[in-house]
Length: 288
Image 1 (cartoon, one colour):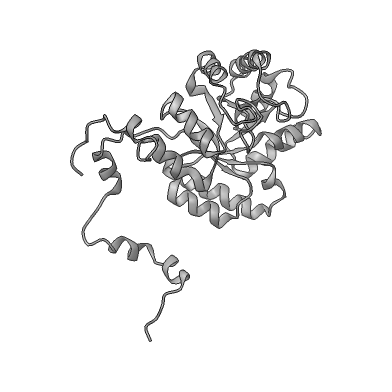
Image 2: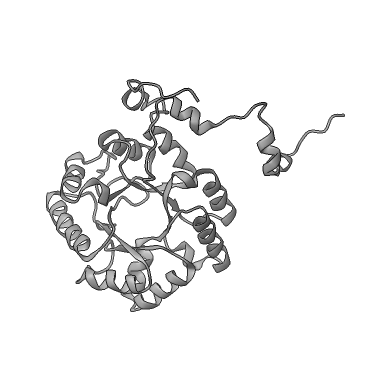
């Protein structure tokens, strides 16, 4: 009776075996360029709500070249086994993927009077950036103090704006967020993250029907510049809407690791729903 390979037999192929499988030398990246797909900057922040290290590392191996940052989110990293978190951070650094902590852990640490210790912890773990949230605790009086304190620990800061329980933005909220965004950018924050939580429904730029508030999104882009905004886009609908409206170089956050490739093929016109807009009219590139 012939041997039926187990899943582990397939998974555990060595890299040398995998590289020998094609009958002739191939280059998928060159083939994609030959279709007319442009090289794009890394503008997707991957979301880790508490995956196991093996899952995170596997996704980094598969998609790391497409990921702008890895976000350790929801405070899960603070209660997980510390060695597991360190494995994730180290793997990301080896892949050239900066690591950022989520805004919730920052808010709680600051509200409990442990901000300096929080910065020390992030630095010791090898984190590159913190997210300074204003979503459910008190508003920060002076963003300069936060950015300057983080810099002393060799950490960048991105500011997350929009109240988590505040519902969808209205005109007044949009005006206030624009003002706060300028405060943070003037203080030295690298980017502004626009809140959408994990649902993109009834929060931030999304109403209860998950429709995108295009006018508000445009107001943010016109005020701060698209390069300085990360739109949280945790669902397929929200991801596709932002890319369709702002183009393939829009920065997206809260994209789960298993959804990175879907987002990136949509950016490049390699998805059924984006081919006509992004790729159909583009001339093919040189033959691979």
